[in-house]
Length: 215
Image (tube, rainbow, N blue to C red):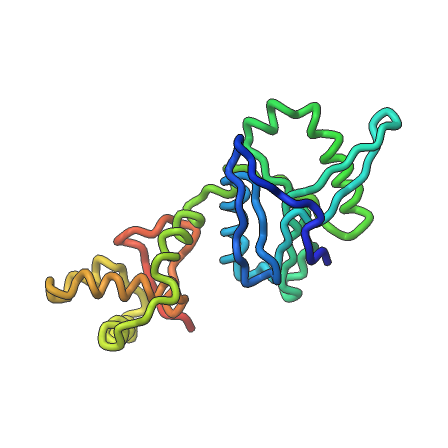
């Protein structure tokens, strides 16, 4: 398991760089594009991901007897219960994959060879897999996560869900006094953000999204 970055990412005038504090790693995880940042956010909220490390390993390979080096973007480790190999992940925009295909193919071939030898799987992630409704939902709910709950509103919402298996935000507000509708909606998204209530995270959360209690 790779626990520390082998490559440091510094400021870059051509792309967004930065670091993200993670519950799934002892160190802050650095990124060098907004797409990498978004992927790290997905990993942070993915319950099957045990831990991840950015810039985890440098792979050496040769082209015409010249030594080359390649560092994948992220190593991802999963909970043992799902029986999945760890991933080495390269994060690229689709346009970059096409524009730089000849340059990238030897790097990716070296990574696949390395993964076969070490029991990993090499994965390429693009904006098609990263910038999804799930990412939108994580960003939306992050503003409510960990906030102090108002006990009366919390209990009113949970009682409503005791009376029916599922409801939507629109249905909940339809029976609420107009003067507390905004507070009630805020409390509802708090419960979803803290996973006391559940939604389908793969579809964009709207007022008609079905919500149910965690079993």
